[in-house]
Length: 224
Image 1: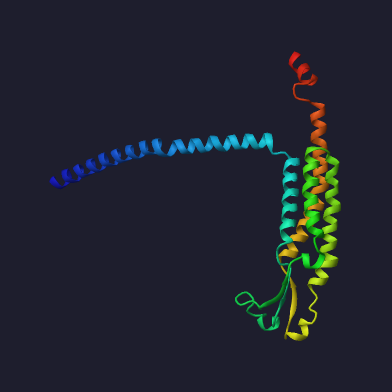
Image 2: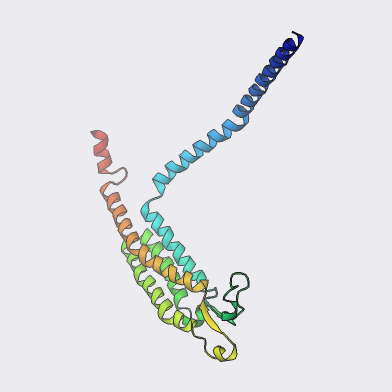
C-alpha cells in the first residue's frame, strides 16, 4: 500500500514537473523563436514580391551578359596553357601528384589584347543596349563569335604546340588550362545571351509604350 502511494506521489511530481517544464519551453518558444521566424517569413515574402516586380527576363539576361564580359576580361590575366613534363609517368597518380608544369602562359601571349578589347566592348554594348537601343544587343553575337574563333583557331593551336620543349624534356605534353576554357565559355555565353537579350528588351519597351505609367491607358482604365 505504501509502495503504491509512493509511486502515485512520484507520478504526480513527475507530471507536475513536466507540466511546468512544458510551459517554460512553450513561453521560451513564443518569446525567442517565433518572432525571428515570423520576421524571416515576412522578409522572404517581401523579397519574393520585390523579385516579381524587379527581376525581369531582360534584366536577368543583362546580368548574364555582363558577367560573361567580366569573366572574359578576367580570363586574359590567367594561365591558359602549360607544358607538363614527364606526363606519361604521372598518368596513374595524376590526382595525387600531378606532372610538373613549365612554360605557363596567359592568353595574351597568343592573341595580344584582342580579346581584352572585345570584353570591354561587350560591357559597353550590354550597357547601351539596356539603356538606349535594344538592337545593340545583337552585337554580342558578333563579339562572342570572334572570341570563339580566336580561342579555337589561334589560342588552341598555339597552346597545344610543344615546340622545342618536346626535345628538351622527356614526355613533354602541352595542355590547355582553365583560362582557355573560361575564355571559350564566356564567348559562347555572349553568343547565346545576345539575341535573347535583344528580344526581351524589345518586348519590354513595346509593352511600356503600349501601357505608359499614368498615360492615356491608365486614365481610361480609371474612368471606366
